Amino acid sequence: MTYSILITDDQKDIHHDFEKIISSLKPKIKSNLDKQEEKLFGSTTSKVLPKIDFQFFNAYQGEEAVNLVNQKKIENSPFSLAIVDEKMPPGITGIETIQHIWEIDPNLPVIFTTGLLEFQTSIRLAEFFPNDHLLILRKPFNIIELKQMVWVLLNH
Image (cartoon, rainbow, N blue to C red; front, side, top):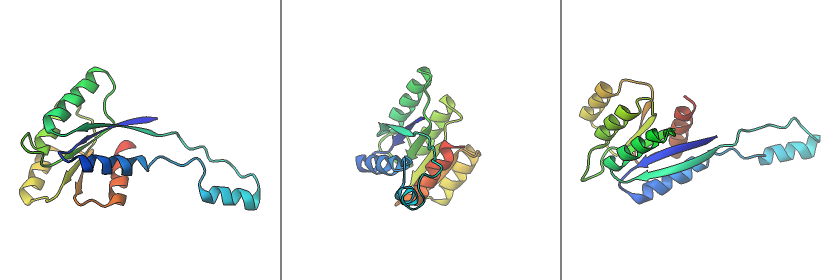
């Protein structure tokens, strides 16, 4: 299975970090523990793990993200997940980006990243996005938290 993931942030380093962390979610064919188990006990019941691949798309502004979501929808190959930053000056905000994205693909799971989640922002998010396919990730983010969010939303 291949998951296509849209990363929207105005900082290139963040794109690289997300790609590296998310790519580590690919299951290994045989873990070291599996190999040790085979050495000790001989042939064991083999675990068949699904093959997972990730294809990353990068947008550095909200408008660019909206255009990519629209293009993928037209091609009938929608994104599996979008990661959208709150602030991407000078363009539209992350909240506006999500609004436009969901006008095109209302079922697209989104991780909304923010350095500072203010009270007003959390109220706007609750008003505009009362659903179960939006998660909020605070920066600087925890790697395990990001992995959990990605896994949950991809398997939602």
